[in-house]
Image (cartoon, rainbow, N blue to C red; front, side):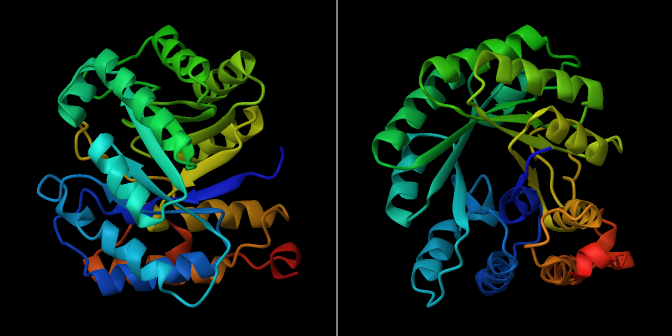
Length: 305
């Protein structure tokens, strides 16, 4: 496996379904510590309507505060954008990577965006191209790529047709999102390979949820099949509020811990990630799905080198 990139999405996907709104100052503290840990990408939030997702209402402010921060962390900052209005806010914020997506599930698409899959796909392609023209890096996703809590199995051909539409438009940063957590390792590996068969130069990201306990196995299957990046969340927090059964992501610190046991990604400061997850658990007053923030890491010569 080549060196995999880690995209931390806890501040967006981790927090978006939480009823308790986290203060901006607390988010900023977590954000700076995540950046200090040396991750490749950190998702600051999403440019969505604050009434629909109150937890994301301060995304513009977080970007403003980061621009004023005296340190240069070297981590690419991303944000989720759903439409043209969101892109305008993103362009004004200083975001570097814009993440957009459409769902392969008609039901999930209607609940998430208010429009069917075909209309959502057209809108995302147009918005992605506009973002690229303005100089932003763009990632486009197929949500519910491995199954849907409402509809059940999703035809692989439907997913690949959406991927092909992205690639034909010149959008080569492709995220395969297991929104409902229905994926299994063979399915993940097979779909990643088929996307790369369509375009060997595609930058494939896997966004995996752990609804049924297969999250880490699916992440490793994606990496072995050639995925360039994995999206994870501190403490395993998260879940789409518009799916039938929301469940957490793979925990960032769990994945980094596993990689470091094999002598990989030793450049990432695991203790910093563990500290953030511990503070997030304290903030919400409950245990999070992740493991390593509670158990502590296994000390090995490779991890301590």
